[in-house]
Image (cartoon, rainbow, N blue to C red; front, side, top):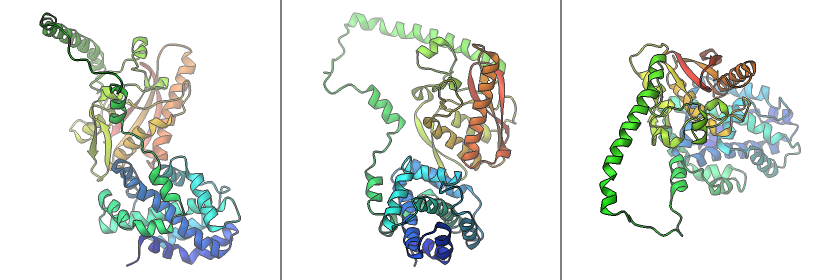
Length: 411
């Protein structure tokens, strides 16, 4: 039985001459380059199997598009677009390669070019761009026909580890597998709050008299917190908005306390205030990591609930960040964008509206323009993640606490 690498290579081999002509390379170099490129892409996928959450994103991308009905036709289409754009990859290919290699896609292309003796410095990048849709269509068809889920696809890649490593450019897999893994959010929280090793533990030195005041103090604190909760939640009930268990108010006091507004370019609610990070399985079979009280959890609960779409269906993003004073989404926003895109793919009838809100500080014209730009940026990020633009609209919502929100317009 043919391996994954062999199956893909056999699929592409009939077009080797056309690819060589397009790239201005010899057929021998292109033949080696195809194998090396496929090994690199599958090697990146194989590397992601070490992190189930990361591989879930890979599987989500593969399974989100309708399965190909004509892989030979897909090959002709891919060859037809090969080399267009001066060797730069398409948006879809760029996003997928970024998912696999982070910021190291150019370095991977250099490894491919070196191992195959390409004469044109852009040939390897063009071949990567060409290979991605072929790989996605091939695996999309396999997932559909064989009924694979994320776990079984991960097992399939792992079972063919030797052939994938043999096809990949020399040194690639070692570089990928020795790269430091990004710690989970809860691990970062633990690391931040852990007692340094050189600090001795000091036991409880309170006297019994001190302890007698403990429970009355706790009771008073509970009453105060309850009053605050009632006061804060009342305007949200009036607006009839579904909100997080921990409200994020856009005030200077909160700014000092690290609860910062979304539109201001920083996290709207600390992760520790959103509950423990857990896994949520979507109807598509994709598993996403979401905080217990985070925005994604509430969106899913609303979609699966019996309420009809209304003004109750608006949810503030709680982990989007922008550069200060701009509509440029920072890299740490990618996780929540990807989660929302995964949710929309799992519920294909859902349509949403992205709303940008400003506060009343500064120029109203500038605030309104920035709010619209940020709403547009979030929409474009979702479209870039594979969501049809017909399912997402964006608008400036007016003057309220500065933030960006998602309204479920239809479910």
